[in-house]
Image (tube, rainbow, N blue to C red; front, side, top):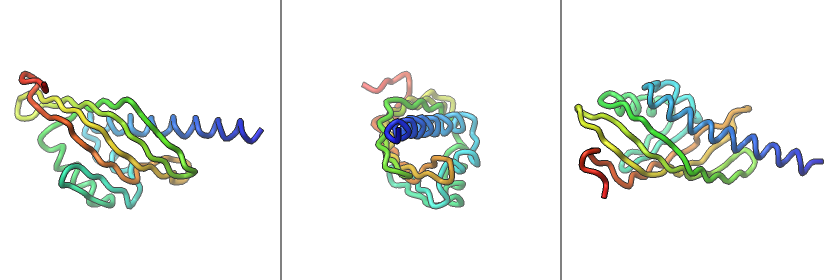
Length: 142
């Protein structure tokens, strides 16, 4: 019976992590900076290119600045999640549409994530965003 319980728990954990990445996208779309930061552990890290910030206070500043000039429309897919008790790792593909200074921009990349269970919730422990391309929509990425 324990095997069945473990399997159900793994399904619930994977589903919760996929939903976490989805909430992140919806909060980015609406510009809900406080909501995004709450999805991170207190000591959570967001990394992208030369930017690497740790902790809620620093993350609030990073997201406020990032969303001051644009509103991204991210879509995530191709979740690959490995569970290890109250920790997990994952890789998730992302496509991002946005408007910057009146111009449509398209971007694509992936997140390398580590997750931690905090109480009964899964949170981002570390997000590392790698962007493959970010170009004006009319120009295309090829």
